[in-house]
Amino acid sequence: MTLISYANYTGRMQETRSAVDLAELASRLRFGVTRLARKLRQQAEPGITPSCLAALATIEAHGPMTIGDLCVHEQVQPPTMSRVVATLVDAGLVERVPDAVDRRIAWVRVTSEGERTVQRSRRRKEAYLAKRIRALEPEQVEVLERAAGILERLVEGSP
Amino acid sequence: MTLISYANYTGRMQETRSAVDLAELASRLRFGVTRLARKLRQQAEPGITPSCLAALATIEAHGPMTIGDLCVHEQVQPPTMSRVVATLVDAGLVERVPDAVDRRIAWVRVTSEGERTVQRSRRRKEAYLAKRIRALEPEQVEVLERAAGILERLVEGSP
DNA sequence: TATTGTTATACTCTATAACTATA
DNA sequence: TATAGTTATAGAGTATAACAATA
Image 1 (cartoon, each protein chain N blue to C red):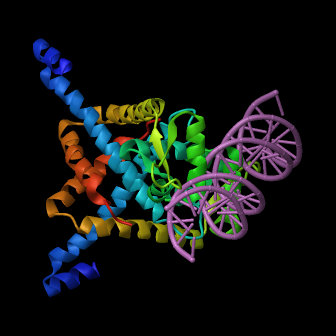
Image 2 (cartoon, each protein chain N blue to C red):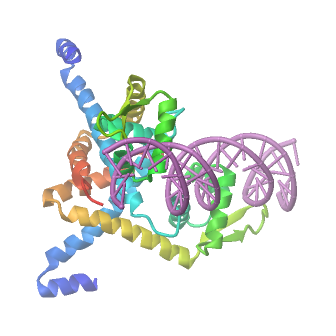
Image 3 (tube, helix red, strand yellow):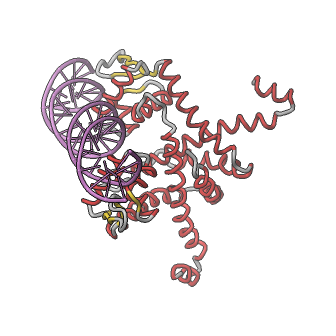
């Protein structure tokens, strides 16, 4: 109340109202995105743990990566990723490819079995989502179409 | 390709194209939402683990709950929640209130310290989000305004 | 000497099984 | 006997510290 009166007084009402709406938008978006992501996680692939699946999906999306690359991307420490990769290798979902020139480096590449696993997992989550989207009004679907692109780019390259 | 030709032949092209777009929308939305949620989790409150914070936020949002209620809501088993609550009690963020009539039941209530912690955590995540939203064009913000409400309701009461 | 990754060890989160207290 | 919750114990995920191999 005080804010709006002040803003009105100083002739910056539009700006101030935007700031207020922005906080509320951030709040609602945080809530909706967090809950939806949680539901999607719950549609998990059986037989593979979330951390392994996340690493696998990352490698599948980026192409062959080193352990170091994966650590940066997944925000974990080297020993953790070393173990995740060992598990994925044991499961036959990825394979190690020694670097031709620098033999310290281990490239990690998705196998065709791993490829199938990632795609099955994605299909499962997307089917869950598609089912809910199908229940919406056409205008709502259109809003989501436009929002999807904005969300994809929203946190791109941010810490 | 085959699908569209077939749809065209049977005169259901519009429906079939929608189905195709729906899968793509689901895919993009899954990607965007998952990544954004991940970034939000990374803006975590220091000194409290994600599982404790999630439980705390749930109690704060719902009011006093039993351990059983919390298990259902957080999708964990009773021993897990029992420990999470014990940790929160030790940290002074929640308190146990014995049920007046059924002494097996333990109600869990947020303390004022817990309240402050939840709100600080939310503010931190929302500030992160608001900062990114502020960099968008006004039309994009408007799309997100409309999308927020749709996302909030999208998975309401679904398994 | 610096970099890449692994092994050793410890702590947290989670689960199942067995238990206690109460209804 | 059934229910609400806790304790005992074990497995997975993660981290830091110390190490090995290579550059």
